[in-house]
Length: 604
Image 1 (cartoon, helix red, strand yellow):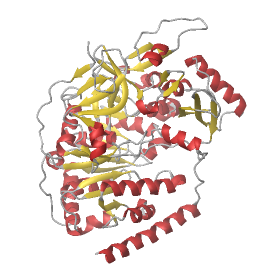
Image 2 (tube, helix red, strand yellow; image 1 turned 120 degrees about the vertical axis):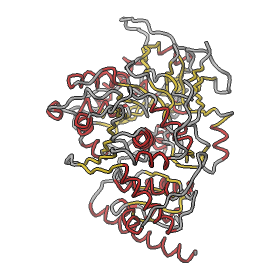
Image 3 (cartoon, one colour; image 1 turned 30 degrees about the vertical axis):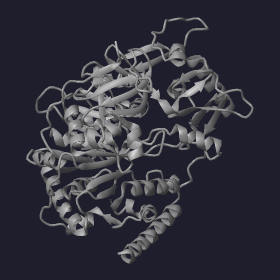
Image 4 (cartoon, helix red, strand yellow; image 1 turned 90 degrees about the horizontal axis):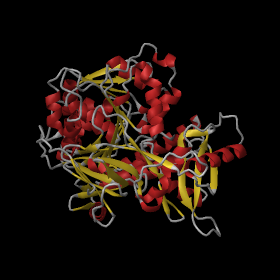
């Protein structure tokens, strides 16, 4: 059979715009709950959210924001983000969520990347708060933001009445930047119709109708598609209550997420694979005293490659707290498709294929691995199914030149449907390369088997060794659970040493400094583990300090950038962060903001 999957027909959208969707949600009795580090809550009903959005729309209109203008948002999870996001839409403008400066030891890199995103999106205004805004002036000045940086709370106080400008379904409603794991982040242009199609498609996979059908809990950042569309807009579209935890709190205290699910009887909560592994490793039984996770029907796992071992470890660890093993639901999507493309049908749980890794690497052939206990046993690669297409979506696998492949052959993953982007904002060349006859080239490699999609890796990240194509995850996942290695902090790349006949495997490994093992012994154990699991011997094992590996704004590893830094001898730990250093950066930002105001006044 050919490698082509077609989802169920999509139903017509119930709304034309995101603001219409919010207006309907405002008539409900539910809304958002923001949880802080003490697990105290601030409630924001959708009715109040809609009212504040109208006031913010007035303030932005009075400031000079016109329909179609882009407004950048650089804010933590909280009420200010909601005011900025929906207020921008109310003004008829286009929100551009950007990530706040969370890695203070890499501020120079942050200023460069943020200035570039402000420039390519053409943002006329940057909305922030009093805390984050202290570090944004340098990027705003470099980008020449016409209306400068403004604090959301101060603008909202100026707004009165209600301004909601009419927009059409086809109008641009959001620019969200792609993750940037293999290239610089691109501005994905999404219309109201794109967003609403994805919200409706996800909604169709929720459990059966009832008062508790959509009860959400999330720690995911709102500048990321899974947090913004898969959690916030889904909650507005149903509507249903949503508990929000700042991502930095989750990373510090992962038990907060599971306690929120238990306390609020959440039915839906998504996260990337690393979060499930982090919880299994760091959450203690006493952290969950009295918790009951039986309400959690959809534990969506996506946004990065899914490791079967860590998923099983999460299930085994938390089943004693009422977690249904079949609640774990692998999914697949990408920002260029708004968010979701395929879902594992509810109740199916974790489904995997254990494959002959040699046949997969040499010929892209999907073949069941034969159990063999001999010393020369065939290495096995276990790949997780990410399910079937959502309503309106199609998935096909081709050879990279457009020729459709058969099932069980690895090829390029392409998707088509109503939630696929209109293109990259103001970049026709990149749009033409990504979209052909409505089909989006995802850049991912995968195969279709028994009517389900399996993702093998990224085309640009293949490690090619002696004519065999290896996904970096083969080597990275081999080190899961090895003492001395930080979980999820390994990058595998191919590199050509001086004088070598071909590429060798290089492993860049962040060391767990708490582990009582010396570097030489750790290298030996890393090499032995990789040879045991993959039968490939690493040529280079470089041990690194925590925080050294480059990551995207959503925490994905940037393998290409890591290789570039390795070859340029720029791979180093983040700068140490001191109170004096932060104060110095804040002073630079204040001076830059002042210079930007003068520049804009003189320019006008």
